[in-house]
Amino acid sequence: FVFPGQGSQWIGMAAGLLESSPVFAARMAECERALSEFVDWSLLEIISEGGSLERVDVVQPVLWAVNVSLAALWESAGVVPSAVVGHSQGEIAAAVVAGGLSLEDGARVVALRSQAIGEVLAGQGGMVSLAVPQARAAELIEPWPGLSVATVNGPASTVVSGDADAVEELLAHCERQEIRAKRVPVDYASHCAHVEQVREVLAEKLAPIIPAQGKIAYYSAVTAERIDTSTLDAGYWYDNLRRTVRFEEAIRALLADGRSTFIEIS
Image (cartoon, rainbow, N blue to C red):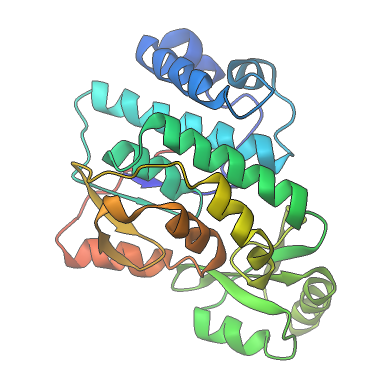
């Protein structure tokens, strides 16, 4: 199972499944109960009525719940993963499905971390998707020390992040050079030095989580290899937000280990 990060959301997503699938609806209800300790909004109302998905502290928990519940639906149909991998915040859902985090700890990580992003990082930065390989992206951002390679999604798909003014200048430069570049619709910069502002906050708020050794192989987009899920502590979830997302390498590691069929849970 492959769990995507932020960006896969759309108004009305999963509303039909709440009506048509008892398995999906039951798992979503469990996710709502788990999230209720940390948020002041209703997961099921957001799905049914729409709205608020522009808020990072809403969209990330909602996507987590939808992905965890979709995985339960696939498994109820007899499709059980031999391994999981996630992209950025998608790793939180992957960890729950693998058995590395309880549903309650997954809710804690996704809710409290997204709140910290919204409270501390919002308004400071931005992210840009570039249709170039990682090495070329690194060359492009050299003139701007405030930018970093944030995610490596594929052979010619890279995202950079950093200071808001540098993002604007990079976009203008790419337009002049006819390089395909697209702004990611967020006002913060993940996977760069900006994240260091929330390190202590996350260490404190995520300290209660108790990761366990899961039953399903877990491939990390932080380390680009298979790891023991009992290491998915507060420090890991800071690294997951701070460090470059090595998604392409993680997929290649899965392929190298003989995995040949991938289902994107989205």
